[in-house]
Image 1: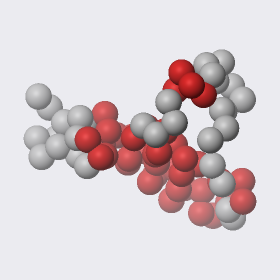
Image 2 (image 1 turned 135 degrees about the vertical axis):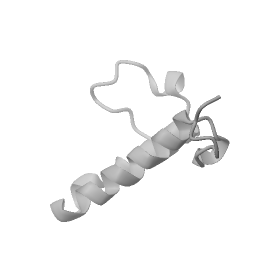
Image 3 (image 1 turned 90 degrees about the vertical axis):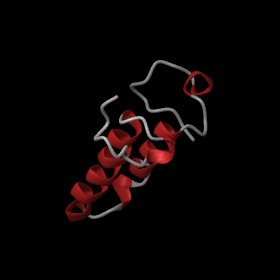
Image 4 (image 1 turned 60 degrees about the vertical axis):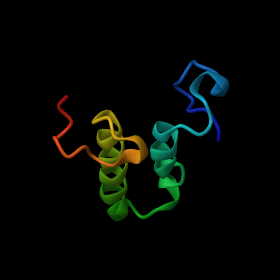
Length: 68
């Protein structure tokens, strides 16, 4: 996976197979999709990242809404 041009960290600092990186990989081919499909792709990536932040490994939201 290539590093995003605006990210100053090397790929090794970001890891290669984290749930976050896997979610962001959904944007890798965005430039090849019709603009009409961008919103759905952004929403899918956003949902995956929110689920990860909610604390559920594998990107599934916690049943308590992410509150500990």
